[in-house]
Each structure stands twice: as structure tokens, then as C-alpha cells.
Length: 145
Image (cartoon, rainbow, N blue to C red; front, top):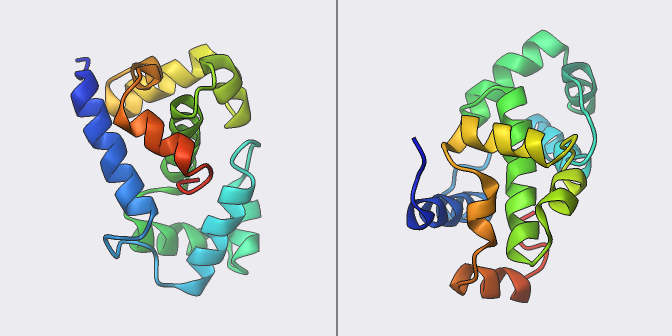
């Protein structure tokens, strides 16, 4: 099922709220925070469980458990979520789908679209519409990414 543009914008607002730390959901374990930073810096390239676990100085099995405990989602889902967030910020700043997809580490816009539909039930192109969020994103580049 496809969501309305207003529903997608509401989802985006919630994501922005969570990423900005206003809901207190940010991980509290310093090792997971280090891993989140590692992922943010490499959102545009592939990352493996072993690499991310290494950035937190943990074994992959221990890291996997701790990451889910702290973030509420598996690493793979979190990485895709971060990439989608990066795409959405770029789209709202006026980038086209293909450029945004590549900048966030997707193989192409079709890969981006499949991932967006699988995770949120809507294509990323919905966020290319003009509106108050687009204006806000242009005023605060990088704030959410």
C-alpha cells in the first residue's frame, strides 16, 4: 500500500525529530554511539558487521546484540534507514533521485525506490514535492544527516 504525501512527510518529521535527539532515543552506550558515528561517516559506501563492530571494539556477535538492544533495530536495517534519511535530506534540498541515491550509497534510483517501498511503503519521489519541509531543509543543510 502506498502512503499519501502527507503521511510520508509526517514520517520524515518523526525521523528528523529522532535523529536530532529530541526524543531521547539516541543510544546511551558509548560503543554504540561510536558505531553510529562510524556509519554516518560512511553512509555512502558499504559497511560490514565486522567493520562496524571493530569501530566499537566489540566482537561481531556481541556488537549485534548490543546494537539491537540500544537502537531497537538490527544493523542492516539501521544502515538502510540512515541511507534513506540521507536521500530524503538531499531530495528536500533539491537534488534529483539519481544523485541522491548515489550519494547515499544506493546502486541506482531503482535500488533506492525498492528499499524505500519495502521500509516505508512509498517511493522516495514523494518527497521531491515543494513545501515547508523543503524550505526548512534548504535552510539547515546537514542538520539531519
